[in-house]
Structures are given as C-alpha cells and as structure tokens.
Length: 130
Image 1 (cartoon, rainbow, N blue to C red):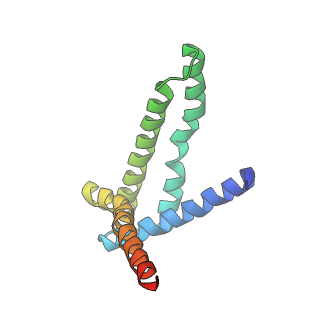
Image 2 (cartoon, helix red, strand yellow):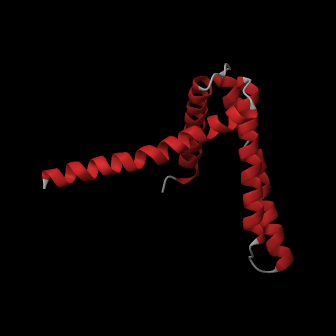
C-alpha cells in the first residue's frame, strides 16, 4: 500500500531503532562503544541480501521450476547477515562472542517473555470488565 518510498522509509526507521536497541543492551551487558558505528556496520550487514534475487533467478533458470534451493540460499544469506550483525556488536562494543550473541538475542527473548504476560494481563482485565 505504501509503495517503494514508504518501504524505504520503514527500513530506515527500523535500521535506526535496531541500532539504538542493540546499543542499549550492549551497554547493559558491559560493552562500551558508539551507536553511530553500530548503525554504520548494520548497514553493511544487509549487503549479502543483494545476492538473493540473482541467485533465486539463476536457480529457477537452471532447474526450470521453483524448488527448495532458493529457500536454502535465502536461509544461508539470512544466517550470514545474522553472523555479521553479531560480529558488528562484538567489535563495536568490545564484547566477548558470548556476550555479543546474548546482546543480539536479548530483545527477542524479552519480547517472547513479555508478550504472554501482557496478553494475560489484558485478558484478565477484559474478563473482569465483563
């Protein structure tokens, strides 16, 4: 609905938010670094996705049908980018590899922890009102 300009704007907003959130958690876990550097490096971690469309089309052209190969390529590129993000956090904040992984997954773990709590709270309040 928003089109390409809206998508680009949304990606930029999410990029800034991600850098800020990971900066916060990197400092919580004892890292000291610069959010601007993390923002810059996160931009480079998206570069592997440039290879996704050409490789998908190449596998379609070679096999003649869509198969699981583009999905495997996509998974490989996703993991490549994820590893680059964790390495970026490690380098910018001088963290150990374990703390960099913990920094990367802490926001997701908190979301998975708090979403059910908020849902149960909302459900309880809703049932009390009835």
